[in-house]
Image (cartoon, rainbow, N blue to C red; front, top):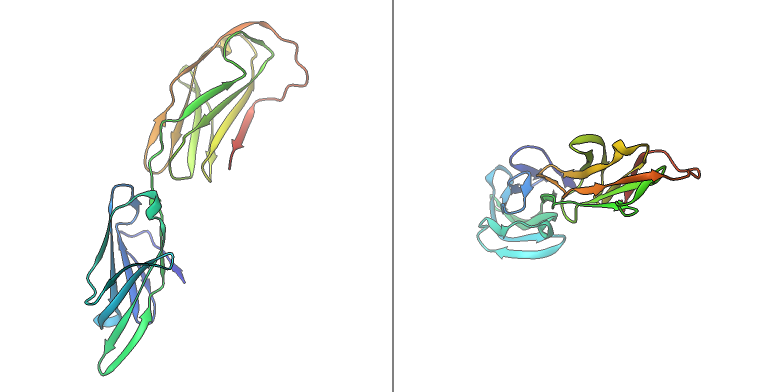
Length: 215
């Protein structure tokens, strides 16, 4: 059983136990806290907290668990199990699974021009390759020439993206940049300058477009 929600406190319920994990969403640097609760406030003891089926902590009296500052490595499937006392009855129960995905900001992307950005001629095919080395997907990549957007591409699973175009005139010369953006932050690359000199014979060069890389 996997549960999630968009509220500040997301709750996963089973017959007798629920696991609360907050905050939601979780960003890098947040303090991740868990609380195991019995249905209708039934008394809980001998509580075990797990992530990806590995024991995180054992608590005799069911104290909340703080796993400290969250990082991407804190992502995983969380659950708890414990001894539930209801009246004269004592039973062992396990909660459902809460999926935690820690959101990380994007790093400043690296823009690479292929082939080399100097001495190109009209008719050459140019590839702008943009990649943020880290950051939670999906990542939206946007490409610019002298501040004017050329287009964008969504990398659903992270990785890099590229923009392909033919050099049509000297107006294609200038400073190129790219921007990476996810749910947490956005960053812009350092500019790369493309110069155009002369003409180049075309040999079935592809038209402009986007290409996902490493997704």
